[in-house]
Length: 111
Length: 113
Image (cartoon, rainbow over all chains, first blue to last red; front, side, top):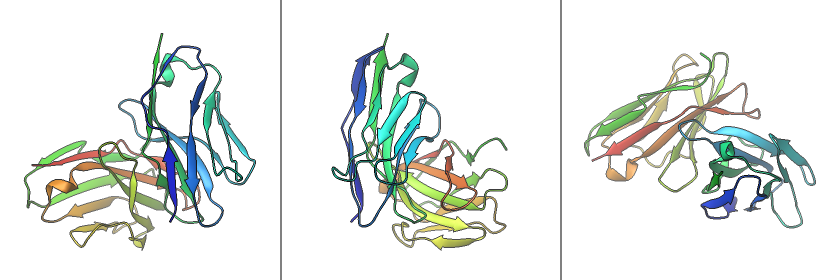
């Protein structure tokens, strides 16, 4: 079946540290890949996406590259800020109406 | 409205009772989705509406769960004979169509005691 696996949290970093949150997927077909973010007290928001192999999604300093050979879509940011503290969800969609989400990774950034 | 609105934000009910959860999508969005997020898990798809009709209800866990969208705008998720295992955050999202960005509400936290 189709699924998403992401690293367990929490990930705890100091401000300006480099961030990687790993995400791998299993899919029958060619999925689109997404990262969603949930800030405290807010709804899920789309952070970035990539729709085909080797595409790079980017937004707010975050990046993720669709790697078909490793079935991965790891989220990276070069210098995190306290305001990036949130829960991050990797998700996929295969030409359907439904998103399949990972379990989420909590990021805590301390000054 | 400016975003997807869900009411109530919190609901506590007794086991066996009936509950309704409401979702007001972004104006003009024809696609509407319900997801359920249990503690420590990612959201799981329940049902998708395109306009007034349920185009995909494959995620509804059993026949105690039902959703409607009679006028193609507001949707109500209905749960009969609630069980403690139904406790979760129920998320609603809307989009202009099925393959465009979905905007999520803040969810309704349902607790069955």
